[in-house]
Image (cartoon, rainbow, N blue to C red; front, side, top):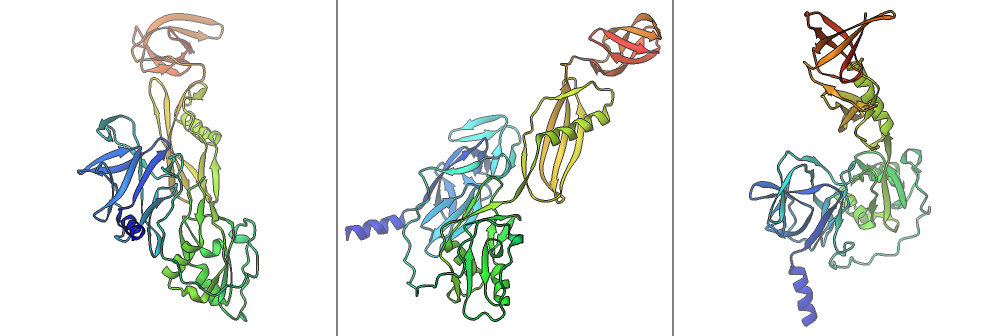
Length: 401
């Protein structure tokens, strides 16, 4: 009796989930109508919604079924509710990257407008669960079924889906068979059963089963697990009678997303070309920022220059990175003269050396614009004449006549 009471009490206890950001981002939350952030949060279900014990809710809000017995979260911030019917995604966390901050008790407040992103994507970091791996509360045991025959083919090594030719047998008799591979690589934002399994059966069955969507593909650099119960749940959601399909037993399958890399060298090459095109008289430039290599989905890669801005300290080039026409990331790359620099403001008095062949004459004047050492700039002589030359150092402008 005591044991039964304790088990019932466990089921009635609202599920909790403690998460932390493994990276530089913060969880984006909302408390009393104000956006707040936290590096760590302990979530529980309050009035059907996910809420941190400090009173803040994820932004956007995440609703949880009333019969949820446990919560789980993957590295990409997808929140799952575990019920007697299985495990289903109910929402996803959003991260914010903050510059200037202040605190409000348990939470962090961003003074500036934060940059928003998703866990597991690009360099945003991932979500870690405190307290080890998910251990769902015991669920009702499924009714035993007759022993399924061993699948005709054993699991194969990881193979690109495009190279697999699933047998389609018009004379096939009996239920269709599904053999999920232990490792698969997918390419799109989501993936189907055909991309991760070999399907045997009648043509119409193979086509229908292969089109079943198995959810979002993992982020680049993060693998996603795929278990038998989840596949069965997705088959049922697609209207397929799973009692008439043979799904071979398999351990947790590993799903990886295909990717391509954009090197640092390529990004800097584009930025340097854009700066030289706008300011051709600049001296040799070097880089003040290292954007780092970028992992991107497969597809046609493009880099577009959005802006080139020059200040007394540096040049900043804004680039936009696209794959198949869709913007994946925007970056700002800083440039400066390779030998160090001194930027002189307009009106600075300098010595002007005017050269013609082997002869030269010196006079004085004032710069007609700001300039770096090594850059071409105009100056006005004391008599009002305007000449153009190269700023050799902080005191000298050389003019070739």
